[in-house]
Length: 348
Image (cartoon, rainbow, N blue to C red):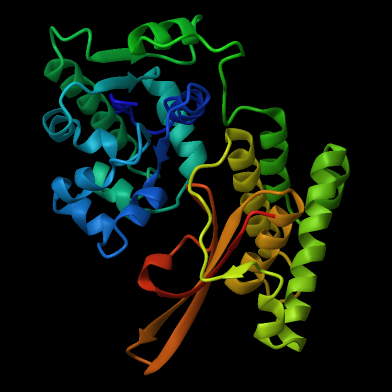
């Protein structure tokens, strides 16, 4: 693609659906902060964003064609200068619906990127601040692109009846012969959320009500986490390594859309199940389990092992994580603090 396209709408405005639509259209998509940090591993991405050092970021994104989620809404003006001729899409949503979705999705969790955007890391008890920032952003985008209808598309994906037509006409692309994707809305997702949030008394009942595919995935995940724990306890690492792939090899960062969705789903289930196992299921067990599960499905992946020095304890700390395509599937949190010392990648 010679022309880049940036979604500069805030999260929870249909950006996940738009990212999948981009992939269907053949764009190489950069989503969220993980893949972006991987492009500049020697820099702290959050600090670059906080200090508005956008040049470092924009120089690194040449391998990608389309961009969704954070941090792109924060510096669309700089993008417009650095990549002239780019297309911009402002995804919007009725503001009360947006705020309700933000509160339900993020709850009281806190992130540095949300602190940068809103001044407050969590939306709880900061609803007015979040809503005012949302309004301000949309108004500023409209003012900046005033009289430039060929450069900016404004779309409410929830209400737009002809999403493909609207999107493809703006980007001058052929309309794909399939339904427009809608993410974060399926009944199975809601069932999984119910399962995760259920109390000890009703989790079994909730589990029994899940679709058979969901039950199988949970059982498979629990079983492989247990096996991974046994391997770590009783086998030397050199024996385990033989099953992880080719040493010091990394797999491609471009994978088919369906494979990437499957990988992300597997990672989500691994993290969820790991919180409830009676045995240790930390980063190493999760990474090994993820590798095994992706291998079984013929999905390429890489497992990383990193080290860093704990200055207070005066000892080394280790971490393990897995990546498939452009997504870090397990162990994403804190991985950039560790120097990669070993990788194992394979395609089967």
